[in-house]
Image (cartoon, rainbow, N blue to C red; front, side):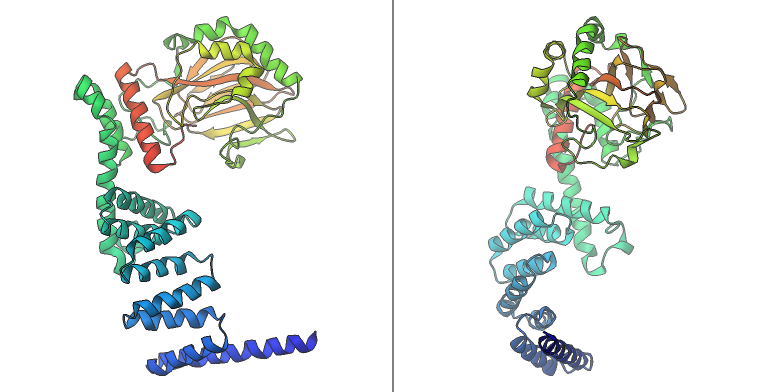
Amino acid sequence: MSGERAVVDRESKQLELRLAHALALGAAGRSTEAEGEYRAILRDWPDCLAACKALVRFSSARGDNERTVELLEHAQRLAPDDPKVAANLALAIARCGRIETAVDLLDTTVARHPDFHPAWFHLGRLREALGDLPGANRAWFQAIRRAQNKGLWLNEQTTPPAMLEGVQRAMQHAAQWRRNIFMESLSELRGAHGSSALDRVDRALRGYLKECDNTPADSRQRPRFLYFPDLPSAPYLDPALVPWTAILEDRFAQIQAEAQQVLDDRVDLPGFLTFDDGADSTPYLAGSGPNPAWNALFFYRHGKRHEENHLRCPETSATLDSLELCTIRHQAPEICFSVLTPGSHILPHYGVTNARVVVHLPLIVPERCALNIVGIGTHVWQEGRAMVFDDSYLHEAWNHSSAVRVILLMDAWNPHLTAVETLAIRSLVEAISDFEGEAKLS
């Protein structure tokens, strides 16, 4: 084995010296000799990716597109998971006039490497060349969002000079296209009820698009997704404003019994934050208990009905079915038995929008359990008495007892919205979700 290793080491050293020599030739301006050396290296070491990439640069510089494609295809065989190689191959194929093939390759690349923003950017350019303007704008939007998530393309200083003009143009096109889609989602309601009925919705949208500053006046309120302006500032709301809270209270005993049965049956409950999303719960949980946990038995999650839990809790299910729930495709309702284990603390956080409020029906509440809206006041749950709050305010909850706390948690439309506004918000959020694929009202 030592003899084989020595042979491998000699080969590796020889390749290293040859690459260094080729690089020195190029640096000295002897490009023809350098290309010849790289070609010889690739012949002797067909799996040398560095030599292959160097030859790509030479062939690209002289406009030999077919040779560039051949070399990049070889590079892709050597590095099948390198998105930069795949994107460069797609561009070379496009320069050969095979734009549809290039688009297919970029589609595959962004599916496998969704955070590689240059591939999205080039996909937008090629889709535009094919006349697919919606596809171009969607790709550009993805490119911009993913680049800016990395701190890139925020301004001239964070954008490569060679790409600046193209990036700025992509931003303008994508922003206008996105705005048009969102405005179109409201057009039917606007036609039926008039623009004045949607005035607050329009201002909410302009704030979302950062066309105006919609920051709430109260610094304790910072919705993560959408702020709806000119609603009464009410961290805690009178439960009577949500009429069906009376129905929940009337059905308290039956719902409580089913929640207790879930605990008695030791049903394996998923984490509230990790269920469906796989989110990291670390920023949200702390506590003195050995295993702080915020778990849930979901009846609805992001609008999806979980039938097995409705069957497990038929009285609760029948009650929920009798209510006029907040429904948004892929988003709401959000309804569960929320289970906070002993010693657990849900840390201060903001909800996503003040267009909806959160309803609690406390089912099992030991002593030393409470909800706190930071800077406003603490609410101590009372079993069987519904409470309603705006979770776009900074809030937290804790269970300092030695027993489990359980509430029926659900969302509702903010009662200060008009009927037309609830329809408009539903249409708008669904349009945003469809376009951007990331808005979650949870």
